[in-house]
Length: 293
Image 1 (cartoon, one colour):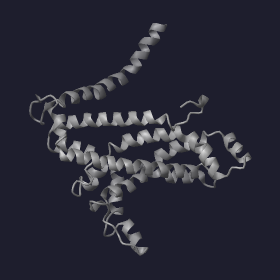
Image 2 (cartoon, rainbow, N blue to C red):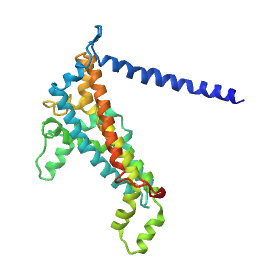
Image 3 (cartoon, rainbow, N blue to C red):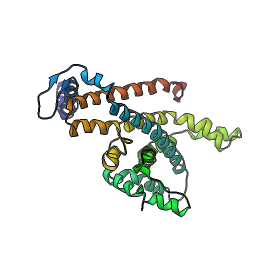
Image 4 (cartoon, rainbow, N blue to C red):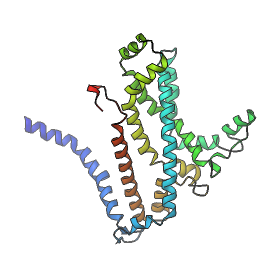
């Protein structure tokens, strides 16, 4: 019976295992090999060792794309965390029509990526866009938003808050898991709303904040749609995000070997950043079980 169950278990898991090997492990191994070659689409790859990696040190656009992506990450991740946490705290209160409010705040997440980008192109339009119309009605000067080098990335950082629904839901789930007796203990000691937040909510939510931080950093390092549809990396490479530069090298300039090296470099960068976040998490992430960190 055990052998029969084992065989059926392996058989049922086989499609997922084969899919992972063929469509994930296989392409990763292939790209690792291609990163060591000089290969253009339609030609034959020739082995060049680490030349693609050393060439990055002298590639100005590589450093530009890395700096732009880092700038976007440092701006978008904290902003999304703060906004989604604040909205989750509001939606955790018992108010009339709570289900409706939760649905409204989550709906933008369901908008398809391209439709979302097209919508924001209109919002950012300097002539008849929504933002500049509101600014003019308030007697304030308009902005060029994504059409100016100095404001392009900040505009996309503002746009990133539009899709905070998934992060908000995770925060909301975490807030509902905070023990109520801790709030009662603070209230008995005479603590107000601020003390309840600072001494109970924030410490108990640090594991959730940590999770959303890691997911947010990994996601923003792979930002692509905005640059591809809205700005094409401009103006003057101001929004040349890393993955968009990788895409351009691979499918516009047909430098598949160099693009594979860029992909593996991004993979290693994300691993290093994630490792550093996990390493520093011991200092500020609190786990209720036996006070473990």
